[in-house]
Image (cartoon, rainbow, N blue to C red; front, side, top):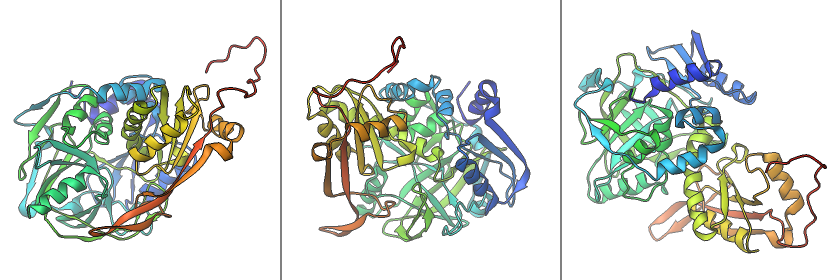
Length: 451
């Protein structure tokens, strides 16, 4: 059986039926839907929720697919303690693409005047958002130099029936690829997938080198060859078992207002000038399910974080081979990274921190701990900081580093071509014990302690 959103829902029903909640009454997408998700998040309650009746649309809406580590374990077919390891293993083994002539995503094909983005749930995620947003759009584009597929998830602001503003950050490969089309004075074909298996979604946020075919990487994370079907109006292929696909083009040298939007930080991002997608077709299943992500929430942290953690682990391992694990804690997302390592040299923690700062523009606080500290327990990490950090030796800052526009304290800098966002100061924290002379851990007699 081909893995898709429906197979995951069935897996969830069988393994953890209590984690799937159906809301049968009608909800308002401009207020109630996101408010309910926020209230549950405040209570640290993250079930997968299927809103069966959403005002103004025929589409049911599913949320919180990746809001818990247990869901990720189900999606990857592993245990919760082996998620990062399994993800890294699959990421290293891309799988083939299998082109098919048809698929469920072609049940309904809308072209020309039939195209209407207003048919989808018009979800207002936060009170002062600039308009309705699609927050789970996995955008597929083609690198004009290598003809390989690039895949990533970017927020999409619905402007009208056939236009969306897309937020492409300058540090992402998609922005680089788009500027390549602009330099050729050519539009860029795009296809946006809404709704698929969570493993495919995790694959869409892998941070692979530019030029790697990321659809094949998504297949690797999914754990099986990916069946793809040709688009109707653009020169791209999309997963045949998607729920919904939006086809279109981004014309060169056009920018429109996008925002404000309540970002992963829980704060509003400013109004920006971003590229515009002109929609040419919509294809979908007959009974398509619309996938939505509420920010900020673990749903966002985990989806965004899996690929980043994998990439950082590999980068740090190049300079500190004894690294044990890398973790982006939800409480510090997306700006905080914790690294656990077996310290062999006093300089290992600083080397790990510098590799992290170079490797991820979002990380501005990096904490290094010893391997005896549970990296996934924020209480243990904080205890290591307050008992093992020597501020005179283990605390340092780097000024004028690359930042991100969603960071409320980032400032703008300049390049030879003008302004470019953004600049921040980054802080490294060595919370490891010195190699000698540190007090021994106090442990009860006769109790086996697992670390």
